[in-house]
Image (cartoon, rainbow over all chains, first blue to last red; front, side, top):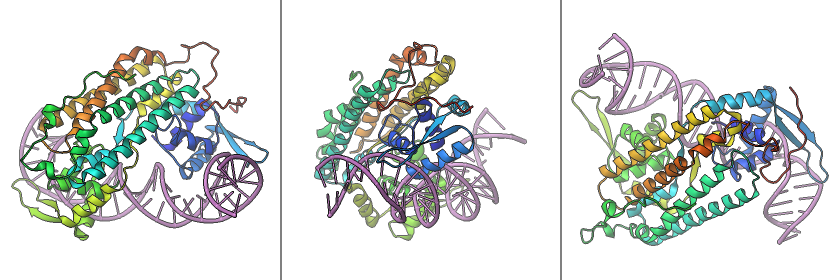
Length: 197
Length: 197
DNA sequence: TAGGCCATGTAACCGGTTACATGATTAG
DNA sequence: CTAATCATGTAACCGGTTACATGGCCTA
């Protein structure tokens, strides 16, 4: 999925300027598809107009720079629909924090605690952000996404908080000594059904 | 986080060839950091050796092509540690399925059902894969990752299955009252619709 | 006998980011 | 007075992918 399709998807829901599309794709509800910056959005929009999939209207504003408001047309919706039809690629989840966790022996417990707290703070922020998004969003067919995201994020956060001590303790190489082996996999049962919705 | 650091992280845990690193980073336990292909791994490994962070040993095999087994040294571990020390960037989660969900009105319920089943099948596969990984992995400080991933993935899957009907029903435009305009995402009202067909 | 697995590597390409240029307005 | 927000756009760069070249072995 590329910036072009992202633009079509956003313009399908509402008219927008390049500036707004960037905000939506990095901070807004569209942040879970692809994130794009100005350098990719503006050319994509120009190409889209060139190809006749969107149209553009200039809007003069008082005290603000003029804006180019794009709207999608039927041809654009058709391409979007076609892009959506092909089977979705698998989700991707990437986490630098997990990378730190995997190399826990290399860093000392203080640094791990710091990384952990930094990370949970970020997740907490995202949960909150999602709640604000949900509140601001009117009813619509795509709205289950918010509930889904919120539920998953909450679960994520909850698991981390429940296991903070264990994670921080995994840092440093001292644990590796034969004195005391951590319970590891057999002891840590994945929480089967914790409802957080 | 780039391929270079990925290679160091893997080599920190065990010796490996470029071929193995690719497998680990796309299918294995390292798939949640960055995924890399041959075209990026081999040059990275060569550079790493050039910089003196890893060493390489040729291994002749019978009936198979010879392999270059890389191992990390102290200088390499030092760079890895340094890379790990800086605060982790926020996790990213990208999903084409969610994109389809957000544009549900555009596709008919059958296609949505197909996409849903395709997606849940993928997630189910990943859950299973994670279980196999856990079983195959020996005890170690980074092992909580498996439990974490399993828990989150399970939650994800459970939510989807609990809401299948609702999600499939969100497809197609006929479902909801004709009152609804396209959802305005930031409380910003969409202006008049310009048709340039 | 076709295709997949092992195994290494290169070159062309490309989709994206970063940094820059420009400039008015408002909030701290 | 400074920084941020609004707003558009370009050019250089870069990290990564795709496709290719090579070749023996094993399985269906």
